[in-house]
Structure formats: structure tokens, C-alpha cells
Length: 254
Image (cartoon, rainbow, N blue to C red; front, side):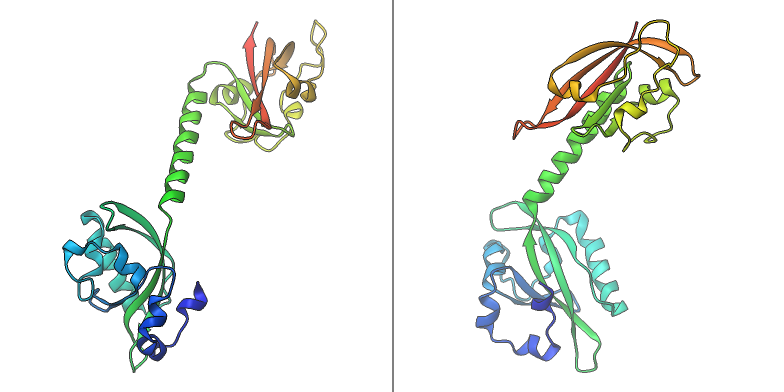
């Protein structure tokens, strides 16, 4: 991608239109006023014909109205600074009648004096990947909210027994600081009382991977008081592959 953009100013203005049109990704050049001065076929195919000719139009008019001012301001500031522009994401209205998210790889167009006079950019449609990421983030936040609402200590470990997450109830009960036990082995995290009145078997993590288990243990709470509890564990399977993904453990006070 960088090699595609790193051409000299002269080469940019004199490259045959056929070469530009053959690029498999949308390509356009805009002048210092934000107007489109060059666009290839892939870009023209995205343009809404009812909006008139793409050449000569304001490139930023293709964006949501609440993003036009800030994006154009950032563009002007970029030209003023003269620094190489980084990759940005912009929402663009396309011919299908919807906004699509594009990752724009940009470089400056320099005039004869070597000063910024516009910008060229190549776009990659990342709408689906952005949507998938947002759905994953939403699901993670929802799961975090569910765990936070549970009144009993909950610990989640991966298939190797490494703690990935604990809920706030567990942190308060055991006196852990937020995220303090993440990354540690489950067997090492749960503080078993060494002098429990009843047998207090060590936690055998490999058993929790085989099937749901229930066992009675005595642990030390955040004040080092022994508390008899029932440890209920259940394997977590990957919904798509069916492979073992980890274990969830819930502690019930007896």
C-alpha cells in the first residue's frame, strides 16, 4: 500500500489515467480546497450519480453531515503542518445507498515549491471488520455487566488454567485489587485454608476440564477468615469449533 502511494509529485500528475483506472482499490486526489481532481473507476463506481459529477465536487460532502466539519478541519491542518498523513477511517456514502467505512491510506501532493497542495488516497472498505469488532466489544461489555451483577464470586480461566477474569464480588470477597489475579494459575489464586476442620483437597484443575464438578473447600476471605464454600465448575466450549476454551468457577457459601 505504501509503495502505491510513495510516488513523486510529478509522477502523480502525469501517471496515465489507464494506470490509475486499473488500480483494484478506490483512488482519488483532492486539491487543497478539498475538491476531487482525479478519481479512478473503482471510486467512480462508488459515487452516487444523482449527486452530479464526482470531479470538482467536495470530497467531504460524501461523509455524514456531523463529520464533515471536523474531517475537513483535520485535512486543512494536515496540509498546513506538511507532515506525512497517517491512515484514517472515514464513513462514506456510496451508490448502494448506505454509509460504508473506509480505511484511507494517504500521502501529500506537493507543488513545484515542495509545499503541500493536496492529497492522494487509496481506500479499503473495512465496514464488515469494524462491525464485527464492535459486535465483539458489545458482547464483551455485556458479559462483563452480567458477571458484575452476580452476587457470588466467579472466576473464569482458559484451558491452561490461567485466570482471565474475576467478577467484582470475588475481588471484594478475597480482598484482591482489580485485575490483580488475571494471568495467574487458578490453583494458585484461590487461598485454601491450611488448617480447615474438614478435609480440604487441593483444586485439581484438570478435573474441571472434563465435566461439571462440585467440591467443598475452605478458603480464606479478604480478612484471612476461613469460609466453607462449594466450588462449582463447568467447562466452556467454543461455540463455533466445539473445542475446549476454558472453565468458569462459581463459589457458593455454605
